[in-house]
Length: 363
Image (cartoon, one colour):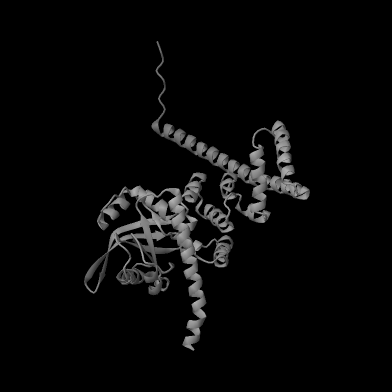
């Protein structure tokens, strides 16, 4: 006669399952911390290897010698320590030490910015770009795939930071590095690339809004980390008249509400007054005591630079950005953004040069 298996009470089964889940979490968390520590130490190791190689090569002052020594070192190190010390990797380590000469900065970054991140960053020619992408990786915890996409989409060229003279941009990045404080110029882009919405030919503002709501995850990724969606068609009643704000977000790092208005045509001067009304209402009725004043973003199909400049939108905490609903070829994207950056920098410097004259006129 076969014995029937003894059935455990369901409470015991639940306890066993909970115990297994808890133990799994402990193991996974520990492995993650170990992997983080290993990656961080490898990053520092690669910096020291690169620095030592550079020191020896620079001493000889011969490029041919540098290539020769890398080949020799690669063969010997690979034989003793295995993969990871190829000629290409050793060259990257040397460039790493050259592009990031201060080991204290590397040491501070190593927990959030891995060697895989640095490999992509060190081959950017512009020091401002390198600093920008490094700090954004640290602040926004980008994966290497996200970093690659951001570089490909020329994110740096689409921020207001790239439109500033080099010294001012350097100061802003220094402040971010030392105080962990994001500014609107680091958060907002121009243009926004909305090709993922699938809009073609003619469409209405309602179509644009619906497409954004349908692709909200992709839209927030394009906006940047830190945006949290709150409401669509937010009703704002002033003097008994109802107005409707297209999209309302909250930005965790900026600690403020962000109102977004969508326009299918070019930016018009009247759009400023509409957004000022919305921001005034949000500031009075929705802003929490510990929050900064709300910001406005007007997303439009195009804008005229003199119109935007004369309206002095910065004082009203309003940003105007264009959006592109179709992806451009890489070369065309680069050309357009580089032209925009040069124009913006010239305009910025012209405004700075006019400022003393305006102040003299007031006296």
